[in-house]
Image: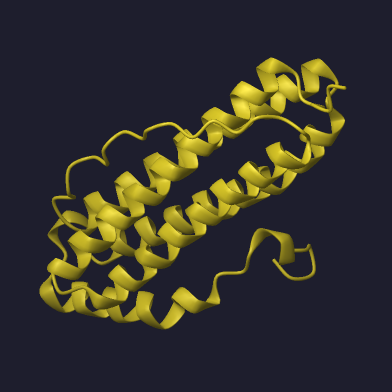
Length: 183
């Protein structure tokens, strides 16, 4: 008896998303290593945590595929992009990566809607909410960097930004805990 509850197209799309989440983790890991080598301990810590969070997203999708009786396909991931040129460029790249991930999630959501796979559609709503959170966080950090001088941030502004990130990186609310009363 076939116990697979996912269509071949949804299975393939979710497996592709696993690869995208793994790639996102590698990007954060690469940028964290860059930040650490530049002396930005707070930013490095923030980015290392986000690398771990992206890996958790990958695992969440992997586990869902298995729960639906489908086959997981682990594939190779692309190399992360080149190291950032500066802090502004780092967070521009972070924002761009999050936007691309959002687009990928939306494609799977649309496909699940078109196929009437309501279990997958419902499962993916967590990721839709998570991507709003991730994009907003990246935009807010870019705004702070712009206010501090953008690509021309002074050393003192870079130091302050690094300390600010170090002190706030623990305060990220997971998407599943966010409500209208607790944004």
